[in-house]
Image (tube, rainbow, N blue to C red; front, side):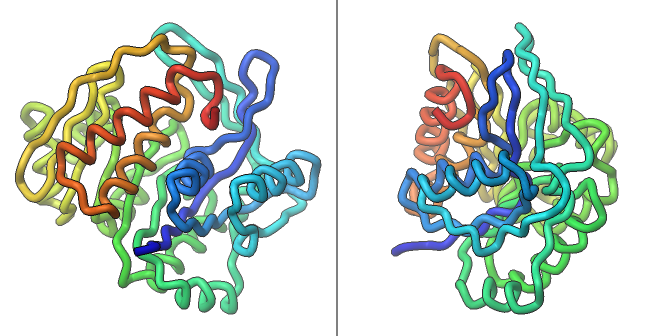
Length: 282
């Protein structure tokens, strides 16, 4: 069956060692899903500039429609990425076009007619009230589909209230170990990693919680059962976008009806592959 997955959020250009690479976690996710054969709807905004035009060129290359992309008089998003031994650091420029994601009532109605199976989102695109308002509208119109949240916490662009809103509408939560510790602190949870995942699942009625562990693999809480896989050894070039590839693999395997261990194995392989290449979309 050909499922449709809607992805909401930022598209931008990562500047890494003086070179520009297209990125943004939601955009990376959309492109990886499309490569895996999933029908994708991408919802975002670009600037009326050369970088915005290049975004459309890449979308056309991947076969992703631009119907739900609005063009703004604000520059297309840019992130300055510094590759460090402990992992990449990000300087996210503000404002960016994706801070102004808008959908007319006509387009929202059209989106509802698309019969979306999964709606994907994170917290970064919610930093502006314009995009946040659009996100809330989409939640109300897409209330029949499953919600996948890659929480993607980036200081200082998240708030406790917006995290709660996201989690209250999430069916599948994906986060890394550092983000898990942030939630532990916010909600005053105690215990080991798997216990914290279970507390999050219970508090927000989330049926699956997946924590990625970098080179140590990943762990999944699914319907009360714990699954885990070890890391895959690769020569790491940079980890930018590896988590987005993992998310795409996770969603594809889930849509294909695979079990917990098989979902993790497939997602882990995609994440490791991207980590062995330069840029989020090798």
